[in-house]
Image (cartoon, rainbow, N blue to C red; front, side, top):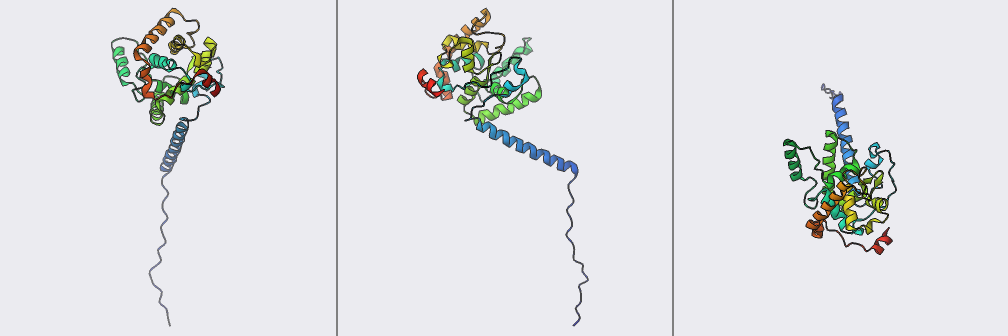
Length: 260
């Protein structure tokens, strides 16, 4: 019996045309950026519990000719007397317990004062300074400001306020190559940070804007005047100003010594 073959030809599946080169490059760039973003988010979340051994600023040439001590003792905020974080808040960012990373009121005030002829003053919050010190380089550029804003918003979202302040106290520069509140207390006053007095805490906070020039141990008239102003602000704010941070009970000196 004769079999008749179908005249219809079997259609072969068409090969999908490859996307253009520019689209493949764009796809690869977007995937790389997404992977980098995910890695950064994991890192930031991890630092909520893990103390960073150093900061980007400590490792950068901007930290100055004096080599920083990269092996510094981390101080838990609950092991410090309450007047230490209160002094820093009174000096650097009084609305820290209230804002979410950006003090828009201070920013508007700084801009208005600049428009009226005053010198443009900084309005960076403790959260912004923490983000800058831990993750970024120091300098003036729009790119760094954009990255700083992103890191600030992220740590405000992933870290509690107490953790942000604790990290700041431990990575801030308190003198040439002096990083961290424990190194600052021992360098300037020869005592551990948990033994700082109210006046000494105010002097340290007063030197924060320019710690390479001002010495809390040998304060100039200007620095001493600023420290007295900080103490008055601390009195006005009061210990209750720290309540939104939900700090734990302050450790006694003996308990703090056992924890180090």
